[in-house]
Figure 1 (cartoon, helix red, strand yellow):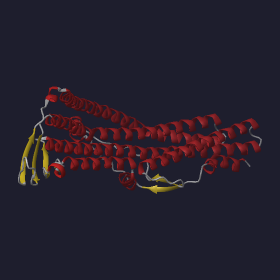
Figure 2 (cartoon, helix red, strand yellow):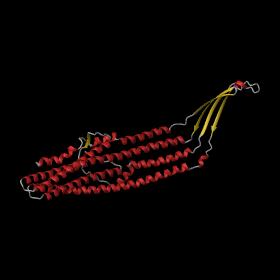
Figure 3 (cartoon, one colour):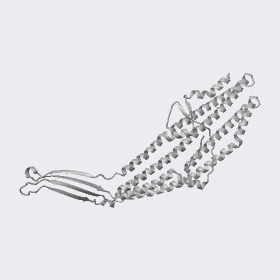
Figure 4 (cartoon, one colour):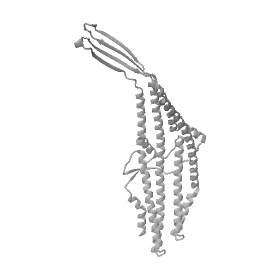
Length: 420
């Protein structure tokens, strides 16, 4: 009787969650979808397109001005004639257009560097989410194994109670342990589905009925690094550091634009006018054509105010200091993440030196002895708990080592993941 009930309790979790189909997906396909479909990455690429359009705008020349004027000099009453004039003028700005072009090109390159940095962070975050899903799948497998073993204990106790070898209280205790295990299985199954669902945020595709299910299993990845070479690589390859350096260039170009804006503009104009015959008896005049040339030069009293120039210079200094700070932060982050990675690898190594195998052997021995009546239920449950805790800690440690490796390689500006 208890056999069927116990089995139902352990797997009721799957029946109570919404129906979901897990679709196997390999890492290469997953990252390709991240690359092509992530909305945030697409938005960042649009920023580069906007900067390119801005660079095109900066190449525009000043437009010429055309003016047409008609004058009637009281021709009807005084017969002073009429006139028509046409004038073409243009403002010449010396050095301003080239400065704006240089600034726009630097801003475009800055956005390209920021896009590359965004992709590096996107790739690291997506890979970490992938490993998180694998971790939750492994933890769920541990829960399933634990639930199955406790179910076996409950079945054995059900038979013993029927034979009169144990009391009803002991059989009830076994049933409660099975119910507790089934509740843990329910939670781990939900966490596994949630981790798979989270991958949709990175792939940019949400399906309420199908979840991406990462193929493979968690395995530690061992890397050997030379500290000096790693630090140098970080300074050369970090996209955000390149963006910080490009920001210094943008600040310098912006300062140059401010200086060029202080240059004097010159307005040149050429005009033609035609005057009809003046038939006034007092001051008659023949019809004639006129040509005018004009130049206008503003008096730049505003250049006495150097606030804009001072502000641009301070922004340039600020950008240089930000770059130096970024260098220090990157070097520090590389050393910290390298130390964390090696510490996590050492913990993984200690787990893999036989600790798990010994705990598994002890567990199987306790379960076998309990089924034969040679040991107490408490000893079997303690052995099960010890094995579950060690296995869970091992999975968490492997995941932490992979997370540390992701962070290390992101900080160093390299990527050497080969996930099967």
